[in-house]
Amino acid sequence: MISEELYKQMLLNLPILCVDLIIQNSEGEFLLVKRDNHPIKGYNWVPGGRMLKNVDVPTNAQKKCKQELGVDITDWRVVGIYDDQFDTNAFDLDTKIHTTSILCRTDVIVEHTEIKLDEQSSAITYSKFLPELLRQRYEVFEDDLIAQKL
Image (tube, rainbow, N blue to C red):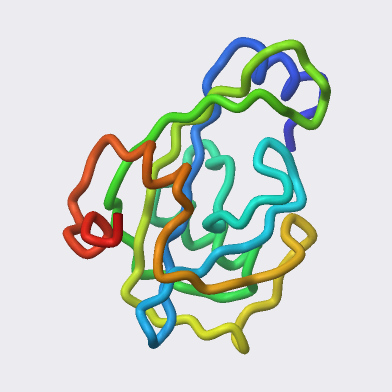
């Protein structure tokens, strides 16, 4: 566990490496969660968050999915990478928060009845499209289905 003071120093000095999850239901719609934490508090966004050290990307995706959604999925593949900078943060630091996110996708279908949200999100929704802000940030595509949804 990282102390609050160390995390503040990280936010001031480093980009934060994250894993974000692309999950769909049987209708092909994308799972979004209403985030209760900064930097995207109040927005519908894909599940995900800060990566753990010494854990590979697919396993980080599996752990985030289990933590945030209560669903254990082991089949993940990297489909994109994007950078973002946010003006808000949980500590009112006078800096933009820089994140680099590895976007992972699974072919496992997840319906809303299977999901048990943790404290980081307050609601789920499914959408035919990924959030516009996320669609604008893609830098690498390996997945034509995701690219077509843009």
